[in-house]
Amino acid sequence: MKSIERIFESFLWNSRLMVLAAVLASLSAAVAVLYMASVDAWMMISHLGEYISPDLSVEARARLRASTVTHVVEIIDGYLLATVLLIFALGLYELFISKIDAAIESEGSSKILFIKNLDDLKGRLAKVILMILIVKFFEHALNMTFDSALDLLYFAGGIAFLGLALYLSHAAEHRP
Image (cartoon, rainbow, N blue to C red; front, side):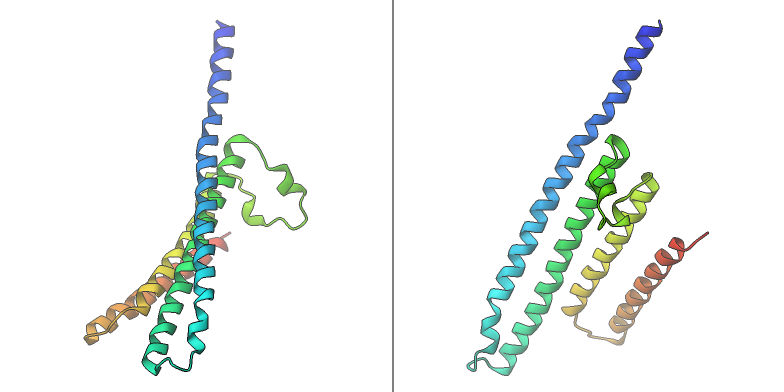
């Protein structure tokens, strides 16, 4: 009976290795999103030569500027999403498989990558996701038109809620 229990417990313990699929998929997705954001950045920068053209009207220059700012926000959003996926992959690996020895030995390692438990991983991911939401809000704000005072009030309320979310996330960090 003891040997069956030992075999079952060994199987149960080794089943944690299934998480490697999630780690590899998340890492692959992070590379893909990082690649897309980098291509978007390169394409945006390569089109900036049009901005200096003397043939460009004031209105066309303003549209190009607004479009460029929107692209910058989208690029930041892509890099933040890649960061979330990378932190998720590293966190799952550290929680279920093994500590990352190279990170521990590295002098330049960040404390963001050292994850002790599931709540720690959730907290780190929540902060980056909050930043993504702020960037998305900013992206929508760039294209917003205010037809009434109520629209402006909704916009101000959104900013207030974002500020409150940031405040609460930092307050939770400094809690004893």
